[in-house]
Length: 414
Ligand code: FEO
Image 1 (tube, protein in one colour):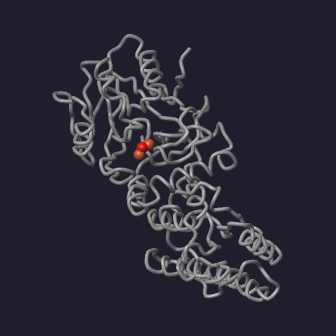
Image 2 (image 1 turned 30 degrees about the vertical axis):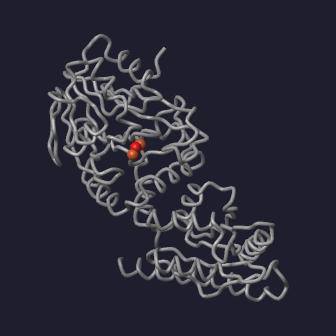
């Protein structure tokens, strides 16, 4: 038995899943695992598209061996040299000594940096180059910074298959499923796909935009990413998500409230705010405790929702450390184009709101920090009711304003 599936008559999925790894890149929790995708094209020549992480190297070799069924492996295309895909290159070279490796100049540089002996087997390709392997002609498309500088994508012009490297990937193991139409993607996969994109590639939105423009010129029938599912229909759905994420446009009108609370008082205020928002008709609200929510989840929701409320207790006369980490990550991942409201708490010198506002103003682009703020002294008192109402009204007004501006732009573009 082998974990191999056909994508087209000539193309096979030969990758695998890892449920043992707790932290992807040793930082992102992956409770549902991850897949490392590798594809084998059986033409007059045999062509493997990317290898896989060490953790599934044995499965990869078994799957490749099964599909080759006694034939030699002629070529390996390396679209991305990060070790979760490139780690097994040396094993492939050892097993298939005639193997030629097709990749970019930068990719070969990185292979050498990792200590791979690739001398005498490299074929360097550049933007727009093509190679024929019999029935199939493959074209190479550079995709720098999606997610590393050496990245390229490969397009099979014969069958319309785009090997998209990390783009259109996802956390979450495939577990036998392979195609997007074999799952309820919106219900079961979208959150992990967003968390993967925003945390891994989120910083490089303009580069993703460049690739989307190139992809729009191709007649795509399949998208084969390096993680997650293969797409064979409904491309518009996922491309639209990528377009929004990479333009830093919110996916949904809604509010993410993130609170930092030591003894429950700031948490109570955050919950009171959520209650008021829902009472006023804005029920697309999520509330996260910054102390026990992984920052990758916070980042993912920050990309999803249009409005963010940061509610922080004051700590060492500044912002609570976990909240500081989150807003630092927002900066690192280039999050922009959001409306942010602030709440603070402090028993003697509340300062968190002022410090958060300073950081947002100085470090993030296109962030509208609302002037309505709530400053709590130890615990939420009745005297803060009107401040809380103003904060809620400010959020709702800003949503209406954004909606009106969008409608105006749509009207103008008609
Ligand atoms: Fe899945 Fe950038 O590696």
